[in-house]
Image 1 (cartoon, rainbow, N blue to C red):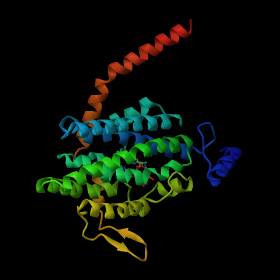
Image 2 (image 1 turned 45 degrees about the vertical axis):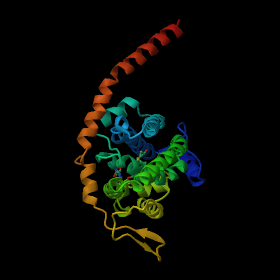
Image 3 (image 1 turned 180 degrees about the vertical axis):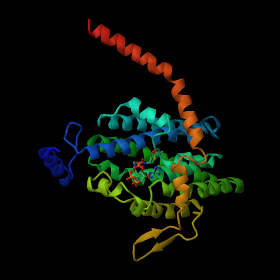
Image 4 (image 1 turned 90 degrees about the horizontal axis):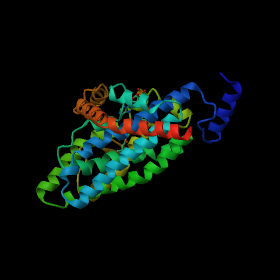
Length: 311
Ligand code: 3HC
């Protein structure tokens, strides 16, 4: 341990400052950031798949254009986050290999199917809505490159959430069949979106340290409750119901209390046994292999540049 380095690190954290790539940092701080940021990047890349499923079948040119823009945004979010993780000394190849070989975690939420167009609305409203709740506090994470990546990502995420809400509003005000399709999608995505925030605080091994290091600003349960508090009035505005009969407001605690979350389902999805885990990994590897020629061309171009620069 480097006592001076540790003291300087502690002083920056205590002053709510930013740790930058060249600053001394505890190995465990570096490791937990590589863990979280790489998993966040993987989530963005895998997150492109459920929605991409509907780009060729969007109901109008306008919806197709919006959905393409959103999926492209997710790719960009992955890029910012891989770049932020690389400032900690890990390589893009290492991270991608961990994802492609099924060793890396990515958000559980992307292991569910998208059987109808209403799923695109439910993903925007619920998944991007949850992502905003989780990502806004990360704009103040103590690690500079991560916090700065988050600021850009959050701006784009709010567009994602709005377009999802608008899709559901259009369907909820449409025919009986469209309304039923919107309600069915909300019923299927509500509980998995609550699981995005992570296990209950009592089962969250990383939270204590992440909060001490001001990476995580609020606990999993606090953000989950904040998210549900946002959903209730918006569900009313949509005229759709949340599939949670035990949902109630606890005046004493000043927060919404949801019904029991099925944490065995969560653990099953994390163990790779969710409805779409295998398909997501298959498609990821197919995309990686299809893109090999781009990587080879870029590497060859870089080699030639280096040769010409080298004279
Ligand atoms: N899916 C998969 N794994 C999850 C998870 C989830 N929803 N929630 C928790 N986990 C994992 C954790 O990674 C950890 O495992 P690990 O130690 O092997 O990494 C374990 O479960 C215990 O959870 P903890 O609460 O102890 O872990 P964290 O302190 O890391 O908290 C987190 C979990 C809140 C997801 C935190 O990692 C985080 O804030 N990550 C950054 C934000 C993020 O990744 N959001 C999901 C992406 S959503 C997205 O991109 C959507 C939009 O852009 C479309």
